[in-house]
Image (tube, rainbow, N blue to C red; front, side, top):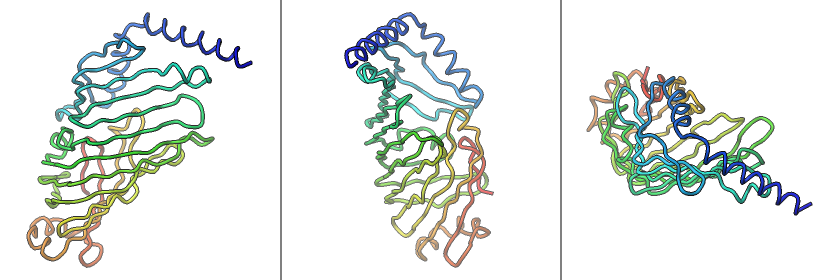
Length: 274
Protein backbone atom coordinates (compact mmCIF):
# COMPACT_ATOMS: atom_id res chain seq x y z
CA UNK A 1 0.00 0.00 0.00
CA UNK A 2 2.85 2.35 0.89
CA UNK A 3 4.63 1.40 -2.33
CA UNK A 4 1.48 2.10 -4.33
CA UNK A 5 1.12 5.53 -2.72
CA UNK A 6 4.76 6.31 -3.48
CA UNK A 7 4.36 5.30 -7.13
CA UNK A 8 1.19 7.38 -7.41
CA UNK A 9 3.02 10.34 -5.88
CA UNK A 10 5.92 10.00 -8.32
CA UNK A 11 3.53 9.77 -11.27
CA UNK A 12 1.72 12.88 -10.05
CA UNK A 13 5.00 14.71 -9.56
CA UNK A 14 6.10 13.86 -13.10
CA UNK A 15 2.74 14.95 -14.45
CA UNK A 16 3.01 18.29 -12.70
CA UNK A 17 6.61 18.68 -13.85
CA UNK A 18 5.77 18.14 -17.51
CA UNK A 19 2.67 20.32 -17.20
CA UNK A 20 4.88 23.06 -15.79
CA UNK A 21 7.42 22.73 -18.57
CA UNK A 22 4.73 22.91 -21.25
CA UNK A 23 2.60 25.62 -19.63
CA UNK A 24 3.37 29.04 -21.12
CA UNK A 25 4.13 31.73 -18.54
CA UNK A 26 2.30 34.26 -20.73
CA UNK A 27 -0.99 32.66 -19.67
CA UNK A 28 -0.09 33.16 -16.02
CA UNK A 29 0.65 36.83 -16.69
CA UNK A 30 -2.70 37.21 -18.42
CA UNK A 31 -4.62 35.60 -15.54
CA UNK A 32 -2.83 37.69 -12.90
CA UNK A 33 -3.34 40.87 -14.92
CA UNK A 34 -7.06 40.16 -15.30
CA UNK A 35 -7.57 39.63 -11.55
CA UNK A 36 -5.59 42.76 -10.64
CA UNK A 37 -7.15 45.00 -13.29
CA UNK A 38 -10.58 44.59 -11.68
CA UNK A 39 -9.12 46.41 -8.67
CA UNK A 40 -7.21 49.03 -10.62
CA UNK A 41 -3.86 47.31 -10.04
CA UNK A 42 -0.94 46.38 -12.28
CA UNK A 43 2.02 44.06 -11.74
CA UNK A 44 5.39 44.33 -13.50
CA UNK A 45 7.60 42.83 -14.87
CA UNK A 46 6.46 39.59 -16.52
CA UNK A 47 6.84 36.32 -14.63
CA UNK A 48 9.48 33.78 -15.63
CA UNK A 49 10.07 30.14 -14.82
CA UNK A 50 12.80 29.01 -12.43
CA UNK A 51 15.11 26.00 -12.74
CA UNK A 52 13.21 24.01 -10.14
CA UNK A 53 9.43 23.83 -10.83
CA UNK A 54 8.36 27.33 -9.98
CA UNK A 55 7.77 30.90 -11.06
CA UNK A 56 9.55 34.13 -10.14
CA UNK A 57 9.32 37.89 -10.51
CA UNK A 58 12.53 39.94 -10.29
CA UNK A 59 12.22 43.54 -9.06
CA UNK A 60 8.46 43.12 -8.80
CA UNK A 61 6.33 46.25 -8.54
CA UNK A 62 2.62 46.30 -7.68
CA UNK A 63 1.03 49.64 -8.57
CA UNK A 64 -2.26 51.49 -8.72
CA UNK A 65 -3.23 54.81 -10.29
CA UNK A 66 -1.87 56.47 -7.13
CA UNK A 67 1.61 55.05 -7.68
CA UNK A 68 3.69 52.09 -6.46
CA UNK A 69 2.26 50.03 -3.59
CA UNK A 70 4.63 47.12 -3.03
CA UNK A 71 8.07 46.29 -4.35
CA UNK A 72 10.05 43.06 -3.98
CA UNK A 73 13.60 42.43 -5.09
CA UNK A 74 12.44 38.88 -5.80
CA UNK A 75 9.23 36.91 -5.42
CA UNK A 76 9.36 33.17 -6.03
CA UNK A 77 6.49 30.66 -5.98
CA UNK A 78 7.01 26.93 -6.38
CA UNK A 79 5.23 23.63 -5.84
CA UNK A 80 6.92 21.33 -3.30
CA UNK A 81 7.35 17.83 -4.72
CA UNK A 82 8.01 15.80 -1.55
CA UNK A 83 4.59 16.48 0.06
CA UNK A 84 3.00 15.00 -3.07
CA UNK A 85 4.23 11.60 -1.92
CA UNK A 86 1.84 11.85 1.03
CA UNK A 87 -1.00 13.22 -1.06
CA UNK A 88 -0.59 16.88 -0.12
CA UNK A 89 -0.26 19.74 -2.61
CA UNK A 90 1.85 22.51 -1.08
CA UNK A 91 2.96 25.79 -2.66
CA UNK A 92 5.90 27.69 -1.14
CA UNK A 93 6.35 31.41 -1.56
CA UNK A 94 9.47 33.48 -0.83
CA UNK A 95 9.66 37.27 -1.09
CA UNK A 96 12.65 39.56 -0.52
CA UNK A 97 11.48 43.04 0.48
CA UNK A 98 14.40 45.39 0.93
CA UNK A 99 16.66 43.61 3.42
CA UNK A 100 13.75 41.66 4.93
CA UNK A 101 12.03 38.46 3.90
CA UNK A 102 8.62 36.81 3.85
CA UNK A 103 8.20 33.03 3.61
CA UNK A 104 4.91 31.18 3.26
CA UNK A 105 3.68 27.66 2.68
CA UNK A 106 0.12 27.18 1.49
CA UNK A 107 -1.43 23.71 1.27
CA UNK A 108 -4.27 23.20 -1.19
CA UNK A 109 -5.57 20.27 0.87
CA UNK A 110 -5.22 18.88 4.37
CA UNK A 111 -5.80 20.43 7.80
CA UNK A 112 -2.81 22.78 7.87
CA UNK A 113 -3.51 25.49 5.30
CA UNK A 114 -0.87 28.20 5.80
CA UNK A 115 2.40 28.85 7.60
CA UNK A 116 3.86 32.35 7.45
CA UNK A 117 7.04 33.96 8.76
CA UNK A 118 8.34 37.47 8.06
CA UNK A 119 11.24 39.36 9.60
CA UNK A 120 13.37 42.42 9.03
CA UNK A 121 10.93 44.13 6.68
CA UNK A 122 11.52 47.88 6.81
CA UNK A 123 8.25 49.79 6.40
CA UNK A 124 10.22 52.47 4.55
CA UNK A 125 10.73 49.89 1.78
CA UNK A 126 6.95 49.61 1.24
CA UNK A 127 5.85 52.46 -1.07
CA UNK A 128 2.14 52.02 -0.16
CA UNK A 129 2.52 54.36 2.82
CA UNK A 130 3.82 57.23 0.69
CA UNK A 131 1.56 56.64 -2.33
CA UNK A 132 -1.72 56.07 -0.47
CA UNK A 133 -1.28 57.80 2.91
CA UNK A 134 1.19 60.50 1.92
CA UNK A 135 3.24 59.45 4.92
CA UNK A 136 6.86 59.27 5.86
CA UNK A 137 7.27 56.06 7.86
CA UNK A 138 9.93 53.94 9.53
CA UNK A 139 9.94 50.74 11.56
CA UNK A 140 10.77 47.04 11.24
CA UNK A 141 8.04 44.41 10.83
CA UNK A 142 8.04 40.87 12.22
CA UNK A 143 5.18 38.42 11.78
CA UNK A 144 4.60 34.72 12.37
CA UNK A 145 1.61 32.41 12.46
CA UNK A 146 -0.53 29.88 10.68
CA UNK A 147 -4.01 28.94 9.56
CA UNK A 148 -5.94 25.69 9.80
CA UNK A 149 -8.61 24.44 7.43
CA UNK A 150 -12.00 23.45 8.88
CA UNK A 151 -15.58 22.80 7.85
CA UNK A 152 -16.40 26.55 7.90
CA UNK A 153 -13.20 27.74 6.27
CA UNK A 154 -9.82 28.90 7.52
CA UNK A 155 -9.02 29.80 11.12
CA UNK A 156 -5.92 30.77 13.08
CA UNK A 157 -3.83 33.83 13.81
CA UNK A 158 -0.80 35.78 12.64
CA UNK A 159 1.18 37.65 15.30
CA UNK A 160 2.51 41.11 14.41
CA UNK A 161 5.22 43.30 15.88
CA UNK A 162 6.74 46.57 14.65
CA UNK A 163 9.76 48.01 16.43
CA UNK A 164 10.92 51.63 16.29
CA UNK A 165 7.75 52.69 14.51
CA UNK A 166 7.37 56.32 13.54
CA UNK A 167 5.24 58.11 11.00
CA UNK A 168 4.42 61.65 9.97
CA UNK A 169 2.23 63.35 7.40
CA UNK A 170 -0.54 60.72 7.47
CA UNK A 171 -3.81 62.03 6.05
CA UNK A 172 -7.00 59.97 5.66
CA UNK A 173 -9.36 61.96 3.49
CA UNK A 174 -9.46 65.49 4.95
CA UNK A 175 -8.32 64.45 8.44
CA UNK A 176 -4.66 64.19 9.51
CA UNK A 177 -3.30 61.85 12.15
CA UNK A 178 -0.76 63.02 14.72
CA UNK A 179 2.93 62.53 13.98
CA UNK A 180 4.43 59.89 16.26
CA UNK A 181 7.86 58.45 16.98
CA UNK A 182 9.59 55.75 18.99
CA UNK A 183 6.54 53.47 19.07
CA UNK A 184 6.33 49.74 19.57
CA UNK A 185 3.33 48.10 17.91
CA UNK A 186 2.11 44.58 18.56
CA UNK A 187 -1.06 42.60 18.05
CA UNK A 188 -2.42 39.96 15.73
CA UNK A 189 -4.56 39.18 12.74
CA UNK A 190 -7.18 36.62 13.79
CA UNK A 191 -8.92 34.57 11.11
CA UNK A 192 -12.28 32.92 11.83
CA UNK A 193 -14.37 31.17 9.17
CA UNK A 194 -12.06 32.66 6.50
CA UNK A 195 -12.72 36.22 7.71
CA UNK A 196 -9.72 38.25 8.92
CA UNK A 197 -9.77 40.80 11.71
CA UNK A 198 -7.07 43.01 13.20
CA UNK A 199 -7.25 42.35 16.93
CA UNK A 200 -6.43 45.46 18.98
CA UNK A 201 -2.98 46.26 17.67
CA UNK A 202 -1.46 48.51 20.33
CA UNK A 203 0.91 51.34 19.49
CA UNK A 204 2.69 52.74 22.53
CA UNK A 205 5.47 55.30 22.64
CA UNK A 206 6.48 58.84 23.44
CA UNK A 207 3.43 60.63 24.82
CA UNK A 208 0.69 58.57 23.17
CA UNK A 209 -1.10 55.23 23.27
CA UNK A 210 -3.18 53.94 20.34
CA UNK A 211 -5.30 50.89 19.53
CA UNK A 212 -6.12 49.86 15.94
CA UNK A 213 -8.71 47.17 15.23
CA UNK A 214 -11.24 46.13 12.63
CA UNK A 215 -12.03 43.85 9.72
CA UNK A 216 -9.31 43.26 7.12
CA UNK A 217 -10.35 42.90 3.48
CA UNK A 218 -9.08 39.66 1.95
CA UNK A 219 -9.49 37.62 -1.19
CA UNK A 220 -9.39 38.54 -4.86
CA UNK A 221 -11.20 41.87 -4.31
CA UNK A 222 -9.37 43.04 -1.18
CA UNK A 223 -8.28 46.36 -2.67
CA UNK A 224 -11.86 47.49 -3.37
CA UNK A 225 -13.63 45.94 -0.36
CA UNK A 226 -14.99 48.59 2.09
CA UNK A 227 -12.95 49.12 5.26
CA UNK A 228 -14.47 48.90 8.73
CA UNK A 229 -11.74 49.84 11.19
CA UNK A 230 -11.30 51.97 14.28
CA UNK A 231 -8.30 53.82 15.73
CA UNK A 232 -8.32 54.92 19.37
CA UNK A 233 -5.86 57.68 20.24
CA UNK A 234 -5.05 58.48 23.87
CA UNK A 235 -2.54 61.36 24.00
CA UNK A 236 -0.81 62.57 27.13
CA UNK A 237 -1.20 66.31 27.84
CA UNK A 238 2.25 67.29 26.55
CA UNK A 239 1.76 65.33 23.33
CA UNK A 240 -1.69 66.85 22.80
CA UNK A 241 -0.36 70.36 23.35
CA UNK A 242 2.44 69.91 20.80
CA UNK A 243 -0.07 68.81 18.14
CA UNK A 244 -3.16 70.66 19.29
CA UNK A 245 -4.13 71.68 15.74
CA UNK A 246 -4.45 68.02 14.72
CA UNK A 247 -6.53 67.22 17.79
CA UNK A 248 -8.72 70.26 17.19
CA UNK A 249 -9.57 68.78 13.78
CA UNK A 250 -10.24 65.40 15.43
CA UNK A 251 -12.34 66.93 18.24
CA UNK A 252 -15.62 65.53 16.85
CA UNK A 253 -14.26 62.01 17.47
CA UNK A 254 -13.63 62.51 21.20
CA UNK A 255 -15.64 59.76 22.94
CA UNK A 256 -14.37 60.42 26.48
CA UNK A 257 -11.98 62.93 28.05
CA UNK A 258 -8.59 62.35 26.45
CA UNK A 259 -9.83 59.53 24.18
CA UNK A 260 -10.41 59.95 20.45
CA UNK A 261 -12.12 57.07 18.59
CA UNK A 262 -11.55 57.55 14.88
CA UNK A 263 -13.58 55.49 12.36
CA UNK A 264 -11.61 54.48 9.24
CA UNK A 265 -13.69 53.71 6.17
CA UNK A 266 -13.17 53.82 2.40
CA UNK A 267 -10.95 51.11 0.91
CA UNK A 268 -7.35 49.98 1.29
CA UNK A 269 -6.34 52.21 -1.61
CA UNK A 270 -8.47 55.17 -0.47
CA UNK A 271 -8.88 55.03 3.33
CA UNK A 272 -10.80 57.93 4.84
CA UNK A 273 -11.91 59.15 8.26
CA UNK A 274 -15.63 59.96 8.30
